[in-house]
Amino acid sequence: MNKTFKSLSEPNRFQIVELLKKEPLSVGEVAERLQLSQPQTSKHLRALMNAGLVEVNAVANRRIYKLRGEPFKELDNWLHSYRHIWNEKFDRLDDYLQELQKKDEDDDGKD
Image (cartoon, rainbow, N blue to C red; front, top):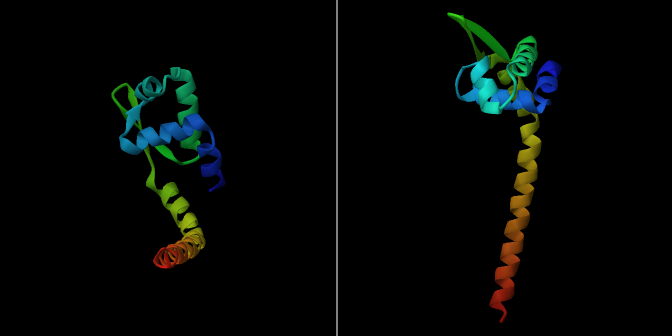
């Protein structure tokens, strides 16, 4: 999972993943949409492939890149272990906001 975080921490690679989330693309299509040079795009795609985040399929003379689901499933499972912390904090915030609203309604009723 460290490879995943390291790869996604680079802004261009993160943007490439965001593009590939929508549809598989060739190197040229990625380069054009992100306004990067083709060699620079290939370098980022190679890093994403080495991290196991993307896979490539050769179609005629084009290489089409698409996301692999497994690393993102691993990431989601890891994040799931922290969701209870966020949910508890949101529940406490909700309780606090309800207390404030009730207090405000009580103060308005005293006028």
